[in-house]
Image 1 (tube, rainbow, N blue to C red):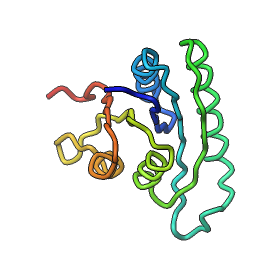
Image 2 (image 1 turned 90 degrees about the vertical axis):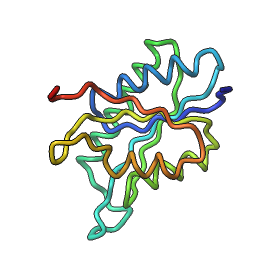
Image 3 (image 1 turned 180 degrees about the vertical axis):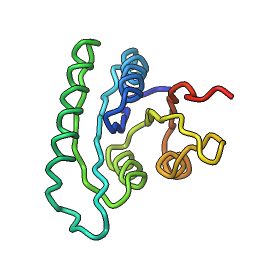
Image 4 (image 1 turned 45 degrees about the horizontal axis):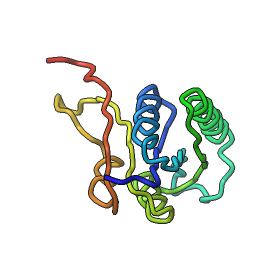
Amino acid sequence: MKLSKVLVPVVGRKIDDDALQSAFTLARPHKARIYVIYVIEVPRTRPLDDEMESEIEKGERYLEHAEKLASAAGSKVETELLQAREVGPAIVDEAVERGVDAIVLGIGSKKRFGEYALGTTTNYVLRNAPCAVLVYREPLQDHE
């Protein structure tokens, strides 16, 4: 697969660092551009452009962290902080708008009702992304 643009959505968890490292490795041989986005989910009870200061600060801190990881890995990233009603559609919209070839998505390993569950964001991205989606899952927390 030839890559020219890769999108990495992040939320500030350890798994995001691993997903970023994977994106750097994938992008390097192709000299692909890497876009890192942090999406703040805005409740419907608030205006979409509401200044959610603590979330904005958290997002900006993590995007700065992603830039430092990229620099240490010899890569460059473009970062963007977004606000949306739902994270999944925001990721897919961003992939379409930027014309990316792949999304690298770091996901947790939570179980729901005793079974592993992907969650609504991951399901949405897998069903609707117009490009390849690489899912990087952290190890399961409970090895039953």
